[in-house]
Length: 430
Image (cartoon, rainbow, N blue to C red; front, side, top):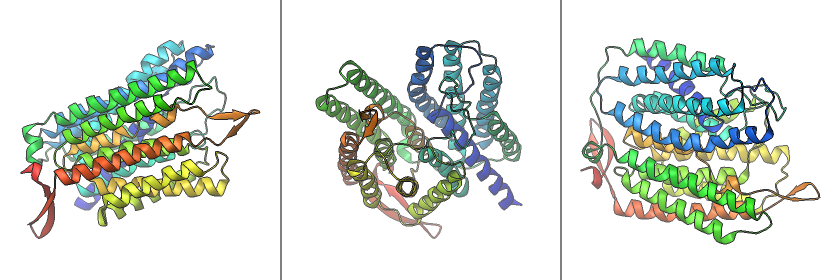
């Protein structure tokens, strides 16, 4: 019976993380039923990046607050409240009269998704199976990217897609109700790193450093390209890359022990995946990518190696440098599979000891990146390959690799046996 309950909680963690991930990645939540202007639709779309940055801070804050309790039901109930709020918001959004109102509801959607992600992560990251399911749910939909084909949505650009769909949120609510009731009287002992106990707000500070800097840097770079689209803007790209690396380093050092590894891997993954780009794929492909992500998580958990993880990410960045924009179906499928395995392996390798650190890493995957705002080069109405996003991604990866090496040197790892199992503990946790 206990195994069945654990499996149900793992399913809830997977679906809940997936819903939260879709919300942060594609935070456009409703269909516009009335005529509106392209400018308002563009404003609605652009609000996604700001909503995602806000959601990162909210998710980590919720996770920190939930982690301080010894009753898991607090986290389950909070996650349920977030999902119910999101479902109500989606029903209300069906009657929105303008894109301006949709922008506000879009922010509400992201806040509810952040509450769901943070509360759920705080309770499930304490347990192996639900933690793995949560990671796969959050990471896999970052890998998949485009859900238009999966959700069978209208391709008319004047239509704002309902993502995530109401039926999926409804399934999440039902599962969360069951898990909340199942964990109603359960208590558990905290296993939090000592530094995290002394400074429980450090993940919140890390999120408040990372998210605003990434958002401000990418928006500023986007404006530079809008003003002078024909310029290379090498200096501006370099400034943005440097600012993001500084923010990532500050965030990584604020986290307890070696939890900052997850931040460096997340930042490098965001940039490299955006440099490769997202392609529209058939809906059934999501099942394969989820399976490959799960395989990567299992591989990273069994044979963790930070060096291998960052080398895999660097390989994807090199691919973005040398590969043409117009990939064949086989090429697109291959690189998608590699990205799924790499993202999963990075997630399995990082394994932060403090729950809010893991929530920060998952949520950070949905932030904008320096490569996401670089425009595509077009000649005679045909996109041509531009190595600039790949080089920018490679610069981020190299910077993160240097940061990882520094972090591992400053916070060496020691091993001790506890109940017959090897347990890692950094000197910062002692």
